[in-house]
Image (cartoon, rainbow over all chains, first blue to last red; front, side, top):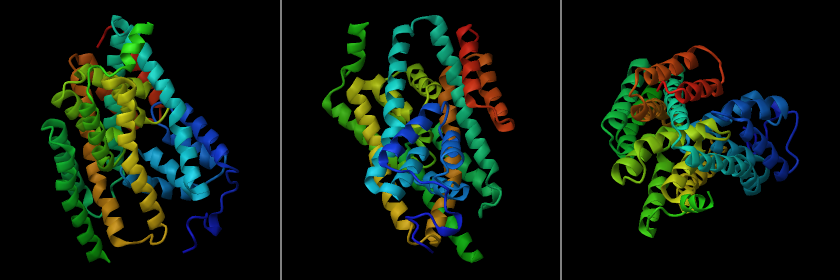
Length: 198
Length: 188
């Protein structure tokens, strides 16, 4: 295995960021284009437009970012920034991703506060809230469709997912107990399957 | 406008102990947020709305709707919740809390993993948490839908969004816009 802090030789990307400043601008740009989720824009900018990563590198980085706790796109940005410029790269990608969008979203919140008593504005937010709920559920449904090669099989996956959804959605049990109480057996369950298969 | 902006940026009556509790709660949530920050919104709701009554149900859901409608990473809904709970100090408490632990852990694991890419327990961890992530997302959808889904039209929006997103490659932006229009004319 070559040093993964550098892109491995067979699929060398076509270009590389010149400086942390360029990283900041790139991540700021992709964050400001991302309505309802930044990930598709990130893939387009980093792989297709700037060619800083190959598609394989993007996928590999994304899967690591998804498994680790924390916001996926933030994790992905950090791993990418660290790969090129260490801590300065991390600060550049994080700052680019978060600073300007945060100012915008807080400005939108303040504006909403001024107009919240207008029935049309309150109604619009309720309608958007219903869609936001649907978007989150749809993401869960889509991800479940991707589990067909999971070592536990679909039935076990569905069982673990359903228990978590009920415990947190319906019973409102605290997250920490649910993740530790159901995550631990799920990880051990997978480990035994993997060991048996190996 | 200036006076109300000043009020909105202020503490809303929370004390230092409340702020520290808020920070600690988001610190713990950060490490449990497998599958993204949005997957833990149900637990934020339990803490901020049910346990402490700092926000109403509707304020919580509209915080997330505003963040989804604005550009940028979804995690910024955490900043909006912080702002609505305790203004600028609230934003600092929730955003630092949600980002700090996961940031440090991600850096450590990413550097460590670069040295041993095929460790069995690492794969078991990755794969084992997959179904949990899905369960967390479903529970978040449930919690978000509850306060708005009082009308049949709102249910239709939730279910319609799930169907359209599963079967098409439309941008979520269009659906958010549809939801906004349907709500503005007073159907939900």
